[in-house]
Amino acid sequence: METLEQYSILLVYSAMAIYALAFISFALDLAKRSSQVKAAAVAAAPASAPAELVGASVAGRSGAVDAPAATAGASGAAGAGVDATPKRSVTLRIGVALTILGFALQLGGVILRGIAAERVPWANMYEFSITGTLLIMAVFLVVLVREDLRFLGTFITGLVLILLGVSTVNYYVAVVPLPPALESAWLVIHVFVASLGTAFFAIGGALSGIQLLQNRREAAKGSKFLNFRLLDTLPNSVRLENLAYRINIVGFVFWTFTLIAGAVWAERAWGRYWGWDTKEVWTFIIWVIYAGYIHARATKGWRGSRSAWLALIGFAAVLFNFGVVNVFFKGLHAYSGL
Image (cartoon, rainbow, N blue to C red; front, side, top):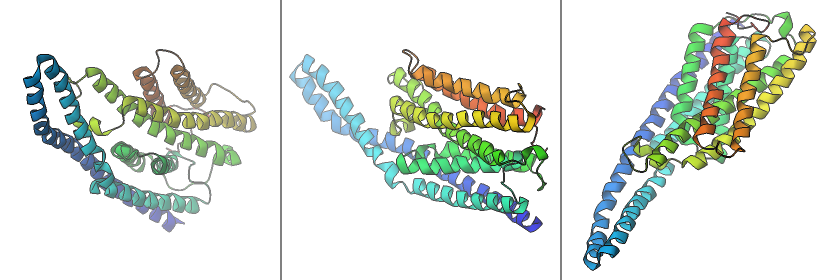
């Protein structure tokens, strides 16, 4: 079993190396998008010049109308030249391929860890970290089948790399038997569903962050503020908000089940459904934030940047729950193994 444990960590390290290469590929794609937007705008500018000259020679009013039309045509040409680019981008395809390879290696590492422990591999902080990040990648790859969210590749691979790096350096522990309180079927259900909800919140948080940038850019109306050319190649803020909402809704459903399953497990383990333990409180706080986010989108005046900020606050609470509450706060849920 010790050999399996060593092979497990080796596969996790290998997955991290592949994810680093995927991160570089996705970052190169974002850089190429910016340069291609600029090149398309420059190429469209000479084509609009004759139209502007003709408009100016006809009449002042006619020229005033033709100039915006020419400008719109130039920006439309630039957009058309860019929209087709991501589909044939070599770096983008390499990034996705490397992400799938890294996912397969990490999946092997998680499975070997479970076989070595002879139980599910999410009983301490290290195991929860490698399983949770695996599910983030799994959700990202599954969503790619339905929606083209490859522009999130840099954020997702970067986040997973950071979490895996912290967990392998600071949270790693050897395989040990389960504490008596964790010897329950609810460990399989409760923790797995919580990890799945966290994965959806991570994707939704990334979309909400980009939505905020698009909101600011669209509100700036051509000024130099937040004039990131790559944003021209991404969906508009409304589309990003709708995508984030749909994904966060799924995460909220899983988190609701996590809260209920945790209460049922607590009653069986400790004889009460709720005890105001730190972990219980923070799980409820996260639930309240996302419930407020979902309600906010149905309230007039709370769409757009306000709802995006709520989603980001919710994901920040998830990260705080994972990295701070689990490690530094003591209580009945102190099973980090550290």
